[in-house]
Length: 133
Image (cartoon, rainbow, N blue to C red):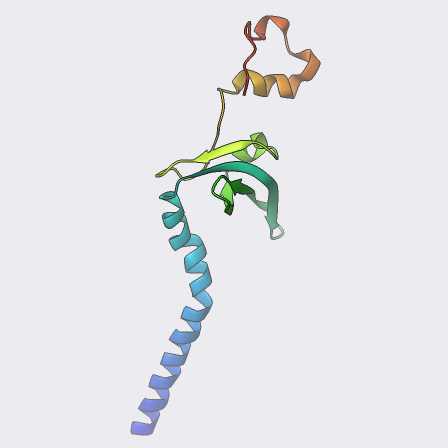
């Protein structure tokens, strides 16, 4: 009877150990790291942008690799709206307390439309004074 209880206790301890060993990367990636990253602040230029596709249902995650002014290279996941606007060489800034970085520069609504429409962009909507990024 005592031997059986020891065996059960060892089995439960082994199961808990293996479960924690397997779950640790998932806990760190999805629970701990986003909270820590939210309180960092940095600025840099986009060196690479890429997306990852998961599973048969076409799930996507979007990522930017940013070379920071302090010499570090950071990889951050971003929403599609930021991913589609941030090309290689774009300057981005991550402020403390924000989840994702923002593109640095003037408001880019008109510039974004000009880029998308090309020569079809109406002349009456062009800015009178050119905006320098």
